[in-house]
Length: 111
Length: 111
Length: 111
Length: 111
Image 1 (tube, each protein chain N blue to C red):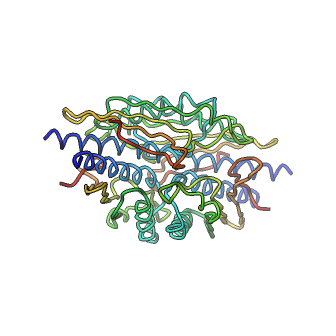
Image 2 (cartoon, chains in turn purple, red, cyan, green):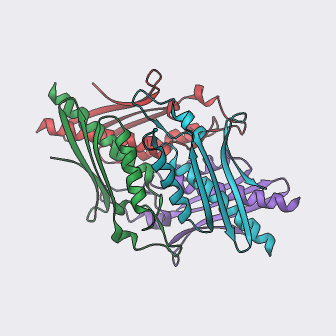
Image 3 (tube, rainbow over the protein chains, first blue to last red):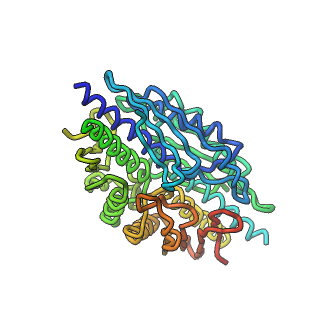
């Protein structure tokens, strides 16, 4: 029983990170709107079923490398997110984080 | 000369509306986050080249028909946007608005 | 051990469905390109880690209600997907399917 | 009269390029599915109003720098697209192309 709840919670956490990444990648962003964009993304995740907490950070450091128009598109290497979901008694936390060695926006369960 | 500027401005206005629609469609939304989402979308449009003004409205009326989880995905019929761009001396305003008869999110230049 | 693998597999399955939904929602579609779009979406899912099978169906029935321009945007109620992932010995299958009563694109693990 | 048609055509061309970029950015891609993805994107553009031709190219060269999972997300610097639209007697061609110096996915009318 409890085991199934953990699987469900892991499944739901995966949905949220996959959704967030593919919904917002490409969004125009710069230092001017990075805060409101983070808050808006968090607000979207918080609406989804079973979510108890969401935290989204866009790297200010990586935002410095903008285009000659003064902004850039939101890219995988800029994005850090943590989502916590609860299904019944099972609580699961998962993270999306750029992995430099893998050249990949890795999503993983936190143990 | 001026004529080319109007064509460029019309082109740029089209880019912004096409971008906005396809970037944010599907975003989780409810009465809880509709305001911050509108502001975040506006902030994204304002970053883009040649934009002088942007206004985004999500229909509160249509937001009432949510799922049993209390939110919905941002749909074409909920979205109203106006963008004003200027290229040189040419200023152009364009609108994205759901057209009920055409069953279509119509984008048009305002004359 | 095996238990962790099932949780990982469930997590990975969730990522794929969340990603697919939010990446492709809004895509222009009609009877003319529905097949190539299904195949392209499947090909994208198949590239992702741990996926062993992917199946995407867009409802021909719901595609009939197009706009006056002869196509529509891909909407949640049109989309059916099944993805199978394997992590170590754990294989998990998950489905995305429109749920009419919930007015919601429900994603669930198949037991 | 003709002038307005050129403005409309430029506007429509802008919509298509903005839409294409923000719809498909982030899509999982590798050498395995690059052809079907190009064809699918073209098929989507061809459905949209006033389009008479569409051509989408994803750089094979840039696809070589994949993640350790053997694929990558479709990024701005990989994407080349040309769209031709006709409104009345006015035909306009526009291009989306990565501009290395500007570090920007530049969209422009072709004269």
